[in-house]
Length: 475
View 1: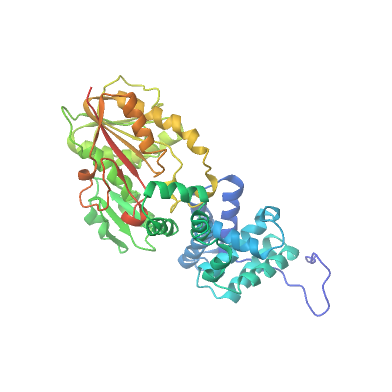
View 2: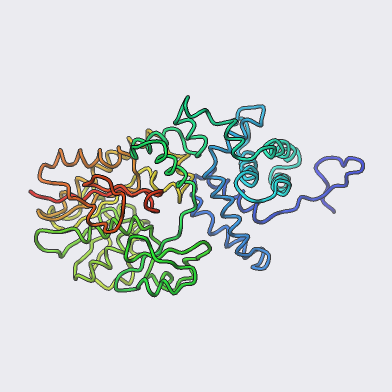
């Protein structure tokens, strides 16, 4: 029996079955997973893309389709705040009363209209067709009406209409124009200091697609080997970094498949290198990564330690993340051990290590380029939740290092409550510790501020906003 239309056919308008567009359908499914399951796009997209290639075939779903789906997902998530303001101006009800799946289809459509080069008629048509498939004809008409309103102007025109004037409310203006929550704009501005240009450059950089950066693990791979890849160019600051230009696929790199190289932001590489090269008083035989998951820094530290004949202990509280650390270190030529342990309740004797890294859990505000959905999930009160853990891990690290040894406190957040405030509290409670100047340990990297700690920035250094403080145990 043939499928019947949901509604009676109108005279002169024969029923047409909705046409499924695999690219936009995939993008919609990814956005729903992000919204419904608090999933991260970078974890959801790869299996969805694999499934689409298997289902549609490589000829019908090729690299260009995958690139478009990726752009639709990440672009929509990055610009969610801006697009919400525009959609709100085009509907006759509060956005909270619009069903989330409808809002996802609308946001995908707005991004195609205002954030890509897709012609307006094609963007509207494709979005309405997607709505018919996933929402039904009735709500597809609503989508059509809203998107036709949006299509009447370009992004600059819409921003003039929906963004508050800068002179009246600078933070609200920047929040709408650059699609960040107001509290995040305020926090980043406080951390950055300076005038309007700096914060606008930073917020704009958060909305750019980050490059994929590889690390050649010392003694196991070389940058020369990685640079033989077609899409590879040298890193900016780390001697072990290689960047893949747009379209470069890490999984296609032999050294990555063999675990001799990995994907790692250059900021993370610089943190590990700074600790490894910090001057010590005394022996250099035992290193600790006290909060090692998922293992990127541990793998680089393990390779560096192996070159010196040093032992690395990689500790991670969560068993599944400890498994990722073990996988990252697999094949390391030097002595190492991975354990499941809580860095705030050490499983080792005090003063056991010469070098200690503690890369603490945080809000992740320094990696908004990679996880754009995080900006919409985080709340100011999250800082209070992380604060005791961050302070506990740093206290544990200072207890673990011997007199004359060095601790690196690192976090992928520039928020002052997660960086300098934590370090200042630790130094007050541990008078036998002093800050080292970290800047000389990042040779060639410009704009490192007045020190002695270091804050990296996407707009200045092309890295995640990693923070680093080096602390020497003196007593």
